[in-house]
Length: 312
Ligand code: ADP
Ligand code: MG
Image (cartoon, rainbow, N blue to C red; front, side, top):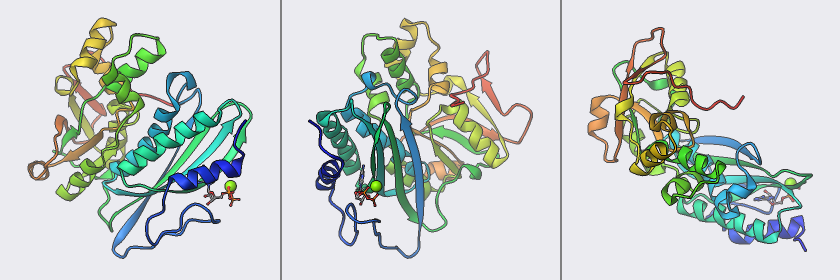
């Protein structure tokens, strides 16, 4: 037996309380107060079964968690604080009530952790595949959000944490290999770097984005938007011992996992020395921004080019 659409929405409504002064689930629209002197950040993303995830490779709890996390991560990439999210689901009949409950619970736990209430969405049936669409709102002081376009020649290129673990986790899932918890968690239960993004904005970083497609691909976006080129020293990439061990064991390149794997959800940013000196969060320097030239990214210490994940 399955809960009807309205019962399911009412379950969701019961699981998420709207903050004071905010109208959430239950009317035609959510209503949020405006805050003077702040700008609103809005980001929308879709996760489609068999494109972004395989149903038998992720638990419903993890999928709910990850759906919220990867979207809130876009707010982190702008240096913002999340305000609210909207969740639209096209649900196939094969997913029963227990599955739906666990999905909503994962979504709820991640949202609660980042103080980001669910204020609405849409629910429909789907003939076969599950699709999940999430919109997240965030905010920061007006005129201060961190863009991809702000990188300056001489900036250091940095990341907020380890790279490649998520790619190794995904590889182990796809090849049905023995699970290493650290790698699986990096892939299935990422944590958006909200505090790190806010620190970067406050310290005056020049450009920033979250790493979803891999540094090799994402850094190109910063280069294009900022009209600059980059040098990256492959020997400086922060790669965990678990990721290195996985790469060694299965004859993969650790740098390849780190640069091309994607879904790290760490922040990739550029900043000058003065901004870095004022930073209270851990970060790793991996390269620097150079004037526009022929090779968009020069990989120091590598014998090949790196490309990163392409959706098409
Ligand atoms: P409408 O007919 O206006 O689309 P719905 O019956 O779809 O209204 O939705 C009723 C309320 O439930 C709305 O506030 C909507 O935002 C919310 N809602 C529907 N589906 C979801 C969902 N998957 N997650 C969160 N809120 C939802
Ligand atoms: Mg609707």
